[in-house]
Image 1 (cartoon, rainbow, N blue to C red):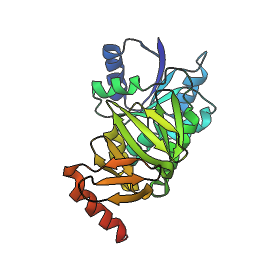
Image 2 (cartoon, rainbow, N blue to C red):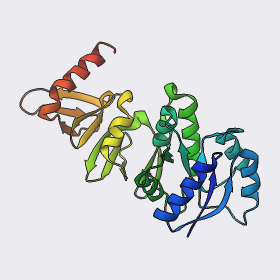
Image 3 (tube, rainbow, N blue to C red):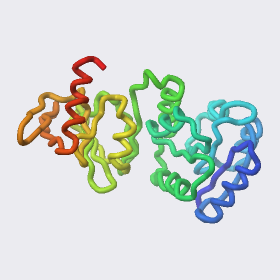
Image 4 (cartoon, one colour):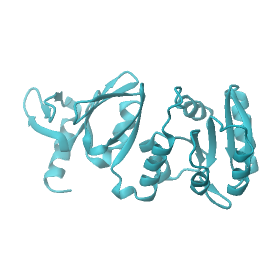
Length: 253
């Protein structure tokens, strides 16, 4: 059984989450509930051991949930934020590999968030939370992200990523150091997440860091040569938009 605590200030939302967990995740045992920061502190202190996961609403009636987390440090339990849509919060969760569920809760999204809980107990949650806070508080100067890989959690500078390569529902990530990370996330997710950082999908299997291009060979092949000397084909249907993107970069846009 996975032991869980729910911190949510709306009674109806709290009960709805409990009902969904009972229906779709019978392996989750609710060991504590709270509706605010002070209430939650008492709840956590009253447990014989830390829970495995905490479902946390970000905006509580007596403050942001980050105030609670700061008071509970150090901790090892996994976090799943339960919140109404907030662009910065969602992006921060994606960059930090922290689970989230949007209200109203979709059962499939709940199951997906639960499936992302690290199985080996080495979740490095406090380091991931630092990345979350960095993006949440300063989205325009964000530079580092967490990658939930098949063999653990990695922390990388976005500028160190050369390219992404898809393989089924996994994505291989190639770094400036020569290291390759295999992530349990689709390439489409990374395409959307990093579009504003000059990452571009040139092929159904490839997303590249445009800042890491060495050369573009026009003609029959339409090949991009990356800094690691990998040759990536630009697919026929993406060539026109790719060239438009290159012109934008050359013009300083």
